[in-house]
Amino acid sequence: TRHLLGIKGLTETDIQLIFETADNFKEVLNRPIKKVPSLRDITIANVFFENSTRTKLSFELAEKRLSADVVNFASGSSSVKKGETLIDTVNNILAMKVDMVVMRHSSPGAPHFLSRHIRANIINAGDGTHEHPTQALLDAFSIREKLGEVAGKKVAIIGDILHSRVALSNIFCLQKLGAEVMVCGPVTLMPRHIGDLGVKVEQDVFKALQWCDVANVLRIQLERQQIKYFPSLREYSLYFGINKKLLNQLDKEIVIMHPGPINRGVELNSDVADSDNAIILQQVENGVAIRMAVLYLLAGVK
Ligand code: CP
Image (cartoon, protein in one colour):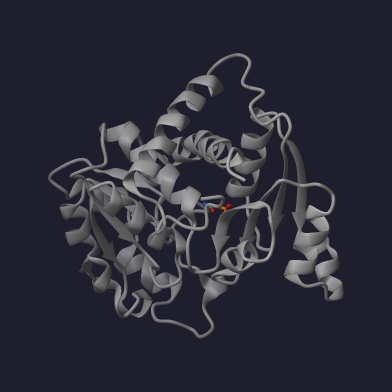
C-alpha cells in the first residue's frame, strides 16, 4: 500500500516489519550522529488541522533524521480560514512538488477521502475519533520493548473509549499481535457495540488493573463531546482515576502507559505518571523511531 491510513488494513507481518525497521532506527537515534540520508530526495508536508505536540514534533524530527525536506502547515494560520477546501489546500501543497503528506484532521475518514483524490503517499496522524495508527504502533513497540513480546500479554485500555482514536488503533494493533485486550471506562463513554471487536469490557477500574499486565490510560476528550456526558471530571477522577494508593492494593506490578497529553489529577495522578511503573516518556522516544520506519517503508512505494 502507498498509504498508512489505519491499523485495520495492516497484517501482523506488516507490523513486525515496521518494528524491525524501527529497531534499526532506534539504534541510529542512540548514535552521536542521529541522521541518515535515506529520504534525501523526498519532500514531506505535515498538514495539521488539529492541535498536536507529540505527533507533530515526532514526525518532523523523524523526517529530519531521515534527511527529508520538510514543510509544516497549521490550519489555524492558513487560507483555510478564508474558505479554502481540504482538497484544494492539499493539491496546492502538492503543486510545490511534495511527495508525502502527514495529516491530522478532526473528521473521521478525512485522510481516506484525500487518498482517493491526490497522488502523494498519505500518513494518518489522527482522524477525529477514528484511528491514530502511528500511536498504536509506538504503543505496541513500547510494550514489546518493556515486556519482551506483545503476544499473550493482557492490555487494559482505560478511559474515554467512545471518543478515542488511540483506543481503536490500539485494539486493532494489539489483537493482530496476539495480545488480549480489555476496555474499561464509564458506560456513557463506551461505544455500544465495542464487544463486537472481541475485547473484554469492564466498568470497575480496580478489576481491570488486577486483570492486566499493562494499563494504557486515556484522557477524557472534552473537545469531542457534543453534549455533557456523565461523569464530570471530578466524578471521573473519583471512580476511574489511577493513583499510587490504588496500584499498591494490587498483588502485582503493572506497566502504566499514556499517549499524552495527561490531565494530571483526573485520569492519572503524578505519583503514578512519574513513577518507575510508567513508560510514558519511553513511548514518546519510541515514536520517532516508529515514524522513521513508517516514512522509510512508504517512501519506496509510488
Ligand atoms: N499522543 C498524541 O497524539 O499527542 P498529540 O495530540 O500532542 O500529538
